[in-house]
Length: 331
Ligand code: TRP
Ligand code: SF4
Image (cartoon, rainbow, N blue to C red):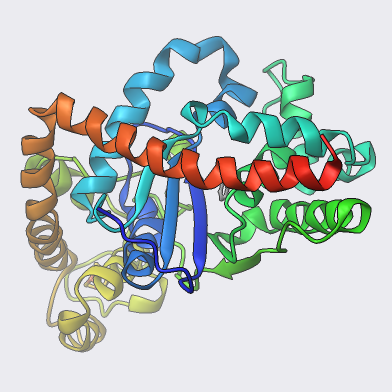
């Protein structure tokens, strides 16, 4: 079990339950989360309430998606013995803090949030002119402040939400006394992993390789991957710097990169061979994750136990914060 060392810094991060994760999630967030659990007190949660802000009509999918994501988390090395893993919706203090913070948050902070405006445009077909959707960043603030987090590992897209979190903490402390520390953003400096078509890897573009894709699917997707478009014939020299596949070699197969780079520029190796090298490597890197997944799929009771224990531990911490919050407000 996790032993709390009082001086250990607190890290909080969450992810919406998006089902099975892909390699972009793995190199972008998961590997970072796994490293952080070695030296920080980490609270990692499944943001199932956040999923409702845009996906309220598909609420029945959340449970299965949460389970798949948890399996990927554990397969990729998140360790319930080191990090607190839990479902947001099972720690009701998130909701209480959200409500209280809602009383002191100017509407304009939420209305001008760039992610709000952007999503309204992007999800045009979907009715999301809802109170819950507007409040998304404030719910996120509550998630973070409930644990008095020192830092939050996030991608660049989440910086506006961190800003609102800090502004809200500052306003609370100004009105009621210093209770909520202002968390820092821990920007992960990872290069974005492209998808097999060269755009950002994303479920919605259908250009991803899932952590759970079996070897034959990995092979097939790697075969379809974009390479140097000007390298039409086997004897043409290639340009690794414009090749999507080469980005994958750099991230997953760094030892082989010098040889591949030279071989590509001199046309000593061809793209078919290069793809074979990458596919083998990805299959090798994913093999232990697949094995872990298989064993976890057979242990639903264990998965539930991990979450329930996480929820107990998270609840304890969040309750202490809420007591201080209520106290400061005189409630
Ligand atoms: N908004 C985050 C995302 O879309 C998910 C999230 C919800 C989160 N609450 C959080 C991330 C608290 C960090 C901290 O990825
Ligand atoms: Fe890309 Fe490899 Fe082909 Fe070079 S040989 S263009 S690096 S796939």
